[in-house]
Every structure is written in structure tokens, then in C-alpha cells.
Image (tube, rainbow, N blue to C red; front, side):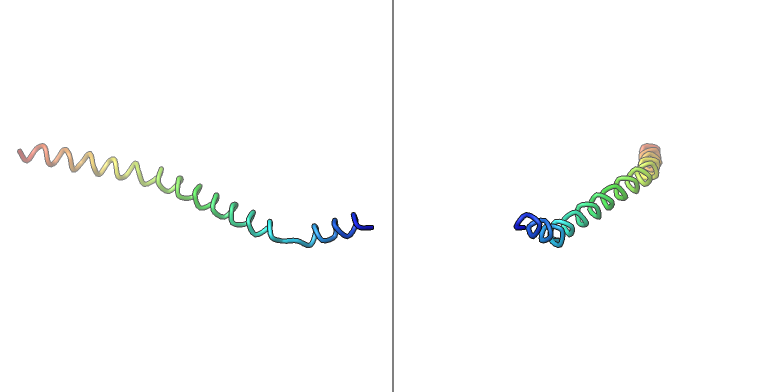
Length: 59
């Protein structure tokens, strides 16, 4: 009988579920940040190259 009560209490416990939710949300945000940085980095490299070209022609 004690085993059934322990199992019932374990099933009701939601402490770990909150942690899992935060881990999933954090992983999703990190994934989105990586995608955004990979998209933006191409434009930044292009702009930096244009600036470098214009600055080298001024001298």
C-alpha cells in the first residue's frame, strides 16, 4: 500500500516539470538567437567589407 501512495504522490509532484519547461524555453531562445545571428552576420560582413573598401580608397 505504501508503494501505491508513493507512486501517487510522485505523479502529482510538478516541481521537475517547471524546470523542464524552462530548459526547453531557454534552448528555443538560444536556437532562435543562433539563426538570427547567422542571417545577420552575412549582412554585417558585407557592410564591413564595403566600409573597408571606401576607407582604403580615401588615402
